[in-house]
Amino acid sequence: MGRMDELIGYGREHGCSDIHLTYGMEPVMRCCGRLVKISGYGSMEDAVLEEIALEALQRENVKIAGDRKLTDIDICCEAADGTRNRIHIYHQRRHTAIAIRLLYPQIPTLEELGLSSALQTLTKLPEGIVVVTGASGSGKTTTLAACVEEINRREKRRIITVEEPVEYLYQDKNCMIEQREVGVDVAGFAEAVQSALREDAEVLLVGELRDQETAAEALHAAETGHLVFAGFGIPGAAEAVEAMAELFPPHRQQQVRAQLARHLKAVVSQKLVTAEDGSSRRAEAEVLLMDEAAAEKLRAGR
Image 1 (cartoon, rainbow, N blue to C red):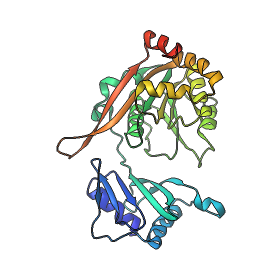
Image 2: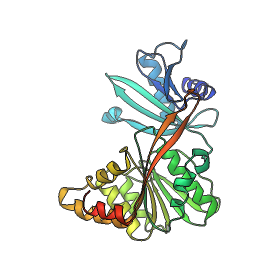
Image 3: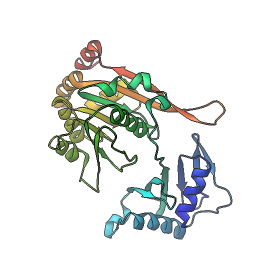
Image 4: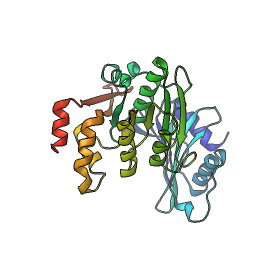
């Protein structure tokens, strides 16, 4: 068992969500939202950090050459115990650093997340765009996956996901689901969304509306009768709507607000809240439903 597998096994045994490896410090894991040192493991040295990074890259057949050595890398890697984990390799103060997100194979239901009443109706929409937003680590990916799985259990539709990296793996139940990973299966989010319209997709999951091109393609997909679920990184429902419009240059923002007013069905802004006894975390969501009054305010820039 390699060092990476050893740390991941320790983290899973203690129910943590993330493991952080930084030069000169003992490994740190996040349990129920709190950072806890893994005592007795020793401080991370360059040789150990590079060994763990290389282990993850080799397992996924990722080769780094030339100036790409300074590129931040996101991959999903299978540990020795068969579990999947998101590995983020980066550099700080000229040293390698690694952030590991422990992924779990079972996709939770909306009921298990406590979001059933808020989101179940949205998964039954025939078309439009639903945006799940929040800070990094707020559980957006899990909520989006739960929405897709809800449709998968209930309906017969063709679903295409665009993710970087792919975290949850779906098993076809009633739906036909294809998962495309940016940087592996397709060059970018916008390109994949555009292609999905030629691939007979009915439902699209866009992992992140990270730029103007991706947002434009997602809006176009909604305009052409597709149901789009998308992730966005701005906390607050109203703030997220304005930030989506501001992805575009000023001369296009009024047009984009009009498009959003027609096709945006809801914005779900969520965060994870730690229980009073510190034993668990749960999702807490604010849902902005786009009724005619909200759409009118959006068109007016309010």
